[in-house]
Length: 301
Image (cartoon, rainbow, N blue to C red):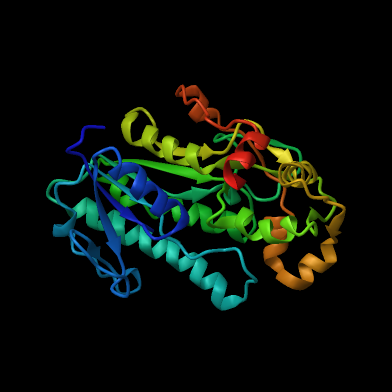
């Protein structure tokens, strides 16, 4: 991307967003953060409030691209209020952003609007690509609404791409960061039977993949952001213990996970999603960390 490129970014304080902002600015790209009023606003930041429908279309002029990553975290026990927040933070924010971009006098060429592999639901051993049907549970419903909320931008002629993120490996956030403390103490182990497929991706590959989406004008719609080598939870557990030189003899039974996390346990921790990055590979993307052990060694040092 040319150094005079201007890219707006939501979710800039999150795990992926903060890393992406550093990645882009390190390449001489101007990053315009779209932040909430409660955030520390600086420089060329744009303030928005999706719940109030507040976002000035004029502030989105002269952008080359927008990367939309904002959304309520899902990794805690759900109740009705939490589920509503998960849904609304994704759908309302995406809808507002897409409408304002469509209203801009000079809209960006591309909107990279996040999604997730939760859209496929719990699918056992089935191999899933971007052509696979979506699921029927809560997260699948959220995923469909989330992607559909960008319709206004697509209708306005903006290229819209949805990276469907798998488990992103980082020590600074996400599932792995929560797993590391007990594993480092030797108290880690598989979840339930351990036969559920976990589709993962290294954070570095996420950043390079987003860069590809911004530059490759043939990519639109859903693109799976996962390694080409998904593993079962039991293997993930074993590999993490091996990298940390710790035993992984403990295991957490399904009933205990459901007791602790309720519906969220079945939808995330115990769900099986064997997802492949077909469209990334077809576009010639080269993974820096295609296998789990090298990715984990990178993350845990």
